[in-house]
Length: 210
Image 1: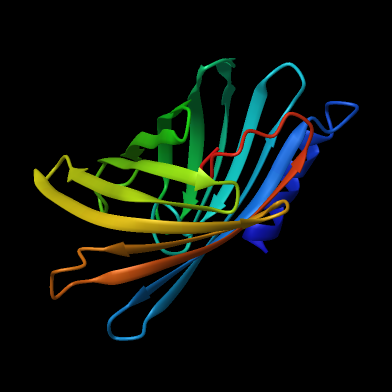
Image 2: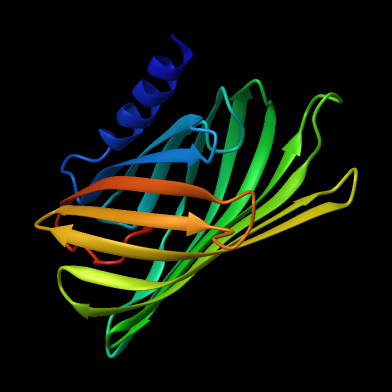
């Protein structure tokens, strides 16, 4: 019921604009070597005036719902970029507030994308943390790309840090993109992330994060 309320809230904010500028749905499936699967759905919307809304489930933690809003600052050209500062609320098994920053850059066939956030817990049972997901890849054709990925997590209360390097390969068919990640590929804790992403609306920038 909570996830329905979260997604409905995000959609209501989207409808505040009279016409859809750009939006999409992303579905990621995390699979461990033990066969444990976790689904992470994301819905996002960008208005014609570059306001941005994003709803997530299972992203910050399992059984957790989050809603973010922010403003996109971008420039298109030989070197294109977008910078999106975000503020959000988190509820469910993890409760608190969050501030994030999405960055994309591309020049020619090379692109960089990063999502980072600081999430503060409102309850003493869970720790506040900083998390970052970054990618650097080359897209030799419109239908495929490949590169490197990196996840970094820092739990503030315990000072525990985790660095997870990985590789990514992705395929695009029309408005659909299908990325596949392997994190810690040489380690015993190797796991996989498979994505199925749909982008809709005008002015779509073909980078797979945002």
